[in-house]
Image (cartoon, rainbow, N blue to C red):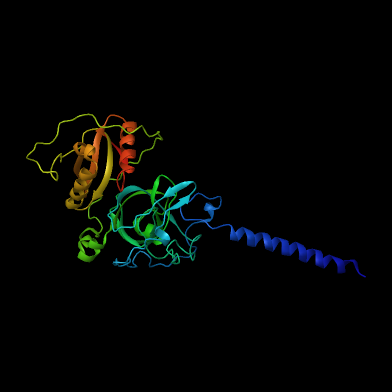
Amino acid sequence: MHPRAFACPARWRQALAVLLLVLLAACGSTHRPGAPSATAALDGPPANPPPDLVSRPDPEPAVEPIRSGGPNKPYVVLGQRYTPLTADAPVVETGLASWYGRKFHGRATASGEIYDMYASSAAHRTMPIPSYALVRNPANGREVVVRVNDRGPFHSDRVIDLSYTAALKLGVLRGVAPVELRRLTHDDIRSGRWRGESAWAQAEARPMQVPTESTAAAPPVDPPPMELPDATETSATARAPAAAAPGFWVQLGAFRQRQGAHELREQLARELAWLEPWLAIFDDRALYRLQAGPYASRSEAQGTAERIRGAASVQPMVLQRR
């Protein structure tokens, strides 16, 4: 018999072994958006994106029931436990945003919906699913409404993972970038009052300052005694200076309308009485920023930020004013 008659079965066995390894690798490659991965570099923009993505309308916010289980159950990723909100609660955060594209296009999200990188959607670690959020790029004033239907990002320095189109609309496709986000509550959606804040800013907003140095969080400490506002001042108007003193400040939220900053200030004053004397609202060009401070050092401000983060539903960010 010709010797090549015995070579074919060997080659077939090798081919089958390779195919089996490929299938096993595919089965083990499930990866939540925003989580570190050895194959994360494979993600990126689509090869031929549609030309009309920027002009496509944002999703229309709707009042949808929040499930008590499913995607809103507590979960663990990379050893960190997360407990999603199950109530229709406001969420206001500032921090870094990332985005995900073709690597996850067509895959199921935490909600069970299929991820479409051409839709305006997002992943958030603890926001109720489903939710709608208003996300703003303070560097250019652009805003976008996103539907939150997935979990992530699982990098500690990021607050939201945007779809490709949402990132394109905001102008943050070059990498992680500072954003401000606000969850639209059912009352916001019913009243429609959020629409007054959804237009893109007409004036260029001052870019956020993101901490560049890595410092360990200082142990939480009570702020030193300071002079309280006069008793005739209301909590909504107390400590509203025209300019911030130099030093380190903990930003708790930024709003297009002053009322939003007042509401968050009153909420935090109720929940964190020790923080109330430190709170101030600044009219910073196109935004009203609620901040606590000033602190003499970044580590002192970071310690306060960690204490706030563990006790309230906000994501503080330490900024430096010169």
